[in-house]
Image (cartoon, rainbow, N blue to C red):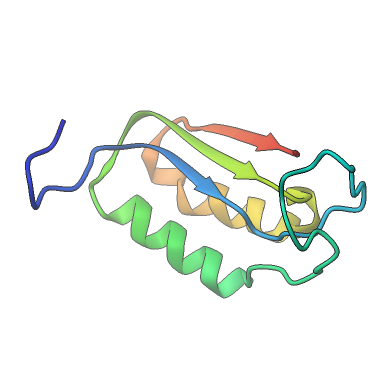
Length: 97
C-alpha cells in the first residue's frame, strides 16, 4: 500500500498493442476488433525504457500482452525483452481474449 503521492512498486504492466483480432468472436467484450492500428515500436520502446529505468519495478514482475491479437506486433515483444535485460527475470505473458 502506498500513501498519497507515492507510486509503486510495479509488479504488473498490461500492454494492449492493438485492438485487432482476426477471430472476431461474438462473445468478445472488446469493441473495434477490426481496427488494425498498432502501437508504434517507438511508443513501446519509450514505455519500456521509462518503466525499466524508473526504479518502480519489483520482482517478481509480469509483463502482460493483452487483448486483440498481441502477436501481430512481434517487434514490440522484442523491444520489451531488450528493455528489461538489466532487470533480471520477468514473466512475459501473452493473453488473447
